[in-house]
Image (cartoon, rainbow over all chains, first blue to last red; front, side):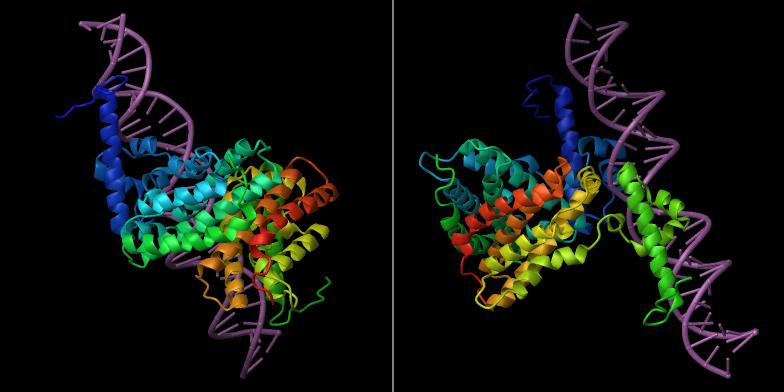
Length: 215
Length: 215
DNA sequence: GGCTAAATTTACGACCGTCGCAAGTTTGCG
DNA sequence: CGCAAACTTGCGACGGTCGTAAATTTAGCC
């Protein structure tokens, strides 16, 4: 029913793949929320979705992939913000603006999520490790974007330091959103508080990077 | 032979424990260097040291503990540098000085190590994850020290941001030392190059934190 | 010097995540 | 209709981690 898109490339096979993938993902998130990430085994998820264990790991090579979505989007977010900065705008200004927009939209990529989801992450060492890795990837992508923006080498000390500083501010703000979510604050209230925090944090960095990588 | 220290508390049992621990650690590092971290199993280490697998995991709960030493010292390094800052010295100045000293001494805690050791770490995803976690712990300890130094709450946005920025610079410099070591440069040459990099990196942060947490 | 109680080492087993492989099934296309 | 490609499946294996009970060693004390 409702085979609206015969899939650009082939057709039936693709749609069934998407359905299977979604089926697995849905059962996984449901079980993760209900009983925790570490407490849920891949075998359980496979049984709930009525597929083989191997099918689960085919779609999601790592167990973390079942819980964390939009990974590459997250890793690229800062780099694209810099690459898309306006004429005359510095990298810092562009990242400030991008963060403000994300907060206003309560974007999950900025750290906004339901309370149960935040608890699942906080309770799982595995997911925390994964999250740290994503912050790292994001910083590396940002460093490459800054190198391209300034014409410097990607391993230039100024480029890497600037990327580290900017990434650190975003990471601190991300964790702050997580903490507030975990404490049970509603997203609207969090967005309001984080906007003020972001002003303080970015202002601290302003004298160091005010004119860096201005388009 | 040579039972110089009957051990402060009890005696023979403690010394044998230390011997067993050292025996396991020696065989582990030897095997890690020879054939890589991931390629070496705990069973292999136990066989080489002629003890049971469980004995290895009793002394070293995590496999990473067999490869990375001085973990708590590393995690505390930035915090103690701030806590021990001189009168009139800012946190940034104290950390600059501590890093310069560590580089001059080619301190392993700053990232100096043999080439084989650096390769072992670089080739192991597990150890990279562990290292990231240590950088994180170090930042958290620094945040607590900064909170105490300024009288602010540990979850204050300025405290967390300052800790994040200072930690980011140290992390970038640490990784740079690792990279140069991996490229085969001798430690003396690395120390010279890193000193210049540190000047640039810390100078970038100077206008943002010049007077922060001055004793 | 020997005995008893405590601690450490040991052996065995289990579970889970990850990976490889061969066979069976379904799909797309000629 | 049949063939080739893909996806799914079940099986097995390995390694890290964690219990638990037995065996050995040690310390303290009579």
